[in-house]
Image: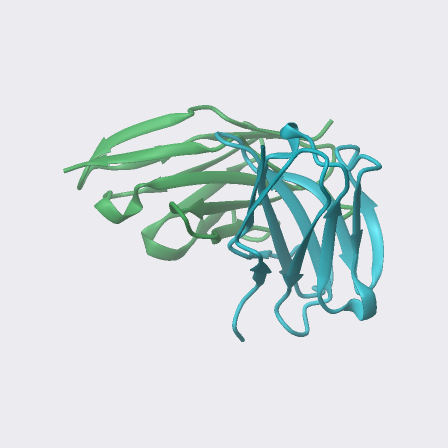
Length: 116
Length: 112
């Protein structure tokens, strides 16, 4: 068990470009989450997958954002036509499927996006 | 509405003195509550969790938290601070429907 990994760790892009981030959850964790964290704030929930199904999306996830989890393994988060306001740390987390719903999430190190 | 409020954005203590980080919550359901710690340039790590079992929850590194339904609070404490405790701490509410709400965070400073 190597933990949750994210790639890249840092991304600098120009406004208007598209970016894609990857998250590899802990193997056998069927729940996967994406969050966005800006400086001085707590992480904000973006979206949730159970296996390959995207079950929950925040209103923060505008139509420029899309997330996938093909085959229920790794996940990608794509941001199209990036804006300076998209600059943030993007965190991925995974958790096992625990009966009753209460669970703990294991977080990756994050991808820091800077839009210039 | 579901929400989490961390009452202090910064807390400063001296090494060896007690730590108290305050968290209040609002939830229409029986809540599950967590405390996470985030050290600089490191990922979020779970300290402890409350899931409707014992109201006094013990976590890692000597931290504990008490769930008080009447006060809608879940404060984090530690009897004696260590320099390595300096970090950002987040109180987290699980709302059901797989959505989690983080508080804004409390930055803990530990003075030598």
